Image 1 (cartoon, one colour):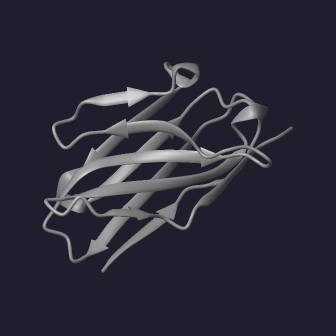
Image 2 (cartoon, one colour):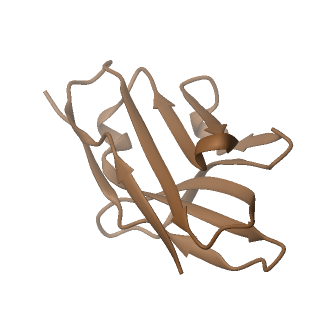
Amino acid sequence: QVQLVESGGGLVQPGGSLRLSCAASGSIFGINHMAWYRQAPGKERELVAIMSSSGITSYADSLKGRFTISRDNAKNTVYLQMNSLKVEDTAVYYCNVVLFPSADKYWGQGTQVTVSS
């Protein structure tokens, strides 16, 4: 079994920054993709950013330049640096990992990010 523990969410003013972390633990041989998704009230869950084991990244077009995904493979941890936050970034943010070689997928419990003045 694999557990994902997220941290770093909270309340921030527009224009502010937050850094989310997600640490994976348990029966892990390897991790392929690590990603962040978000779900705003009344909306579908959407991909924010994804990073492969080799470091290739992809972002939602609307977030490029403001959000940065990174990972520490030694710690099985993925990060999301969020800058210049906007009210519309308010959502629950979930981390997601895809294990290697099983391709099993796991989700974090979610962390609330609220951008408000």
